[in-house]
Length: 128
Image (cartoon, rainbow, N blue to C red; front, side, top):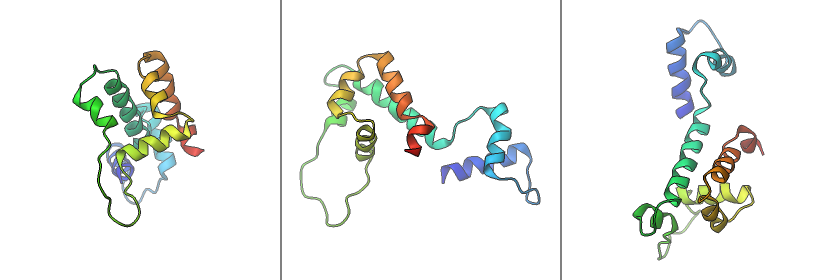
């Protein structure tokens, strides 16, 4: 839904009206030289991993850092488990072949974290 909104905004900015039919790929190719934007899903994913790295480097006792490790106790409702933010992180880490403890240790090294997060956020990793 966000990408649809971005495409609509780009069409308005470029002055493309209804009779002029242009595909989304052509729209992005024509705007790549002028706007240099990645698809919105990549931008969100990149910002998410930057925030995680920033949070994992915080000092001990920081509320944000504790929230990443917090495991609520109790019974869940019947049915399919909800797709939560934490579960999406865990699946992305699993696809990269890492564990949460390895990711926490990797976040201390900024250069290593940057290469790890860029590898996660590359367009090639989403195709696989």
